[in-house]
Length: 614
Ligand code: ADP
Ligand code: MG
Image 1 (cartoon, protein in one colour):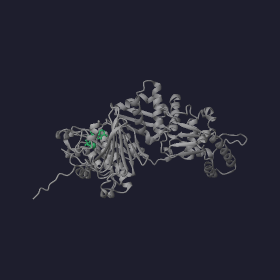
Image 2 (cartoon, rainbow, N blue to C red; image 1 turned 135 degrees about the vertical axis):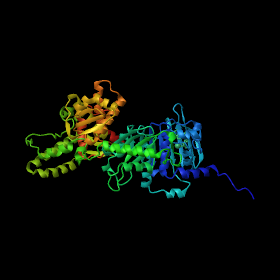
Image 3 (tube, rainbow, N blue to C red; image 1 turned 90 degrees about the vertical axis):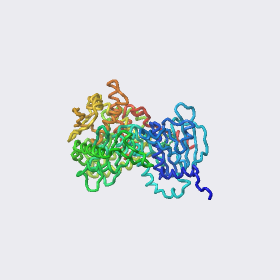
Image 4 (cartoon, protein in one colour; image 1 turned 60 degrees about the vertical axis):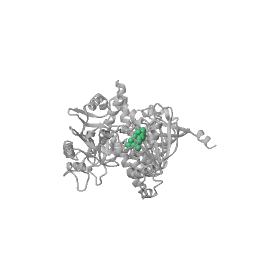
């Protein structure tokens, strides 16, 4: 009888391997992000279309590949990360199997563009279903860009098996979280169908968590630190009162690699014993560092499971350190009164606007009055308005008009009707407009004014803080219960350096030993819940800039606070907020640029517009 055994052709073998590595778009995301990290990238950009079904692209500024390596990277078992089986026990990289690119290229249309730092030009390779369609030279920046289109184009069964876009997107975001949390020192951005979902700057771990899960996360985190011979633990657990019904925010990283471990998860739940409500799950973000020789990460193709040599010891240490932290940080809900959400607004017109309507006793029917609202830079806003009035007229005249209407009406009506009228007045003005939650558009004499809301607000806050620091009279709000924050000795030293300036802005600080900073007062502009993140941002900024004179320290502090507290891109503003921003910006000494010298607004003259319509 004839021989019947045949070797599978490569493309078939690749397709089979692909089934193991690539279950869904999120698996591609994970592999590409990990390759970018292994390549030493500092900036990584993820671009997704249609939940990754149409496009997944990762662009990095890592070390890139030579022409030969670029070609080889699509071969199965082609890896630069291990040379021998022994290396498996000394892994410091994410990859090592050398199958990801080969697998992905077997089941999608892949375009690779890559260039090494010292090369003039880069390499572009297109592979479709394991077949190299083209290879040529290309002009491309240092680093690598891989785009993966039409995933599972040649395996319709798999394609049909994919879940709805929202579900697949969730999986992708989960992978993104895991990678981004494990590497706070790398900048990540993520775009889905053309809109930016995340933009995570280089930061410390706490800030990375907050940047991903929102500023509210900050007050929920309890630090966990433990350094023993077998394991180093660092990170945070969520306070018990914030525990969730779902298992959403549970992250273990072992040597910077996300892992799942039911066993270690149990160690945490048992540390929370008695503190959680029925059915609630603690959240945690914990980094475990162990000697790579004591673990085996090779037991699962997607590498999220791990085998430890001595699981029992790890369990005990982990449980004890979490318990210790929960005890030490006094996990009683003392500081969490119900907050008035007005206090969280970045500037305080909300409180100021309403009362000024109800009790405007200074009204004089014989005097033409201007609408004098309380701006952040209020003391000398009058003189300062002079230099921009020529430019900016639309809003000014209208608000004057509605204000005098208001005066007439208010004079003979009961205070309650004022608020009704107030709404109508806002309705009627319509002099500003917000575009894409990013720009505020307004009319000026010459045409149109387009303001970048974030930069403009940074300018306003910056001048405000500068003024407070120099004239030493920032208003302070006293905290009912002082906050105690933990910092490293190095961080406390930085705060000590800035203590005087911080106090001039309105902070009331006391440095205690044992790495504790006690805060009993904060500037009016600073919500209590943001204090620790603001100080961390400040420390980070000082670290990166190293101010060497008093002047630059003041400047740096004002810049940093302005940055932390400003309205962000993506924040929707009411009409009143928009107008307030416009007015405050033009009351600034240097309204044209942000504290970091970026343009705050542009104008478009009517004749420019007219040219466009010719
Ligand atoms: P592995 O990561 O397991 O080595 P992959 O198939 O993911 O296998 O990648 C194959 C090889 O291609 C890597 O070992 C690396 O040398 C190279 N490579 C892949 N992606 C990149 C990238 N973004 N930048 C530089 N080199 C890369
Ligand atoms: Mg890889």
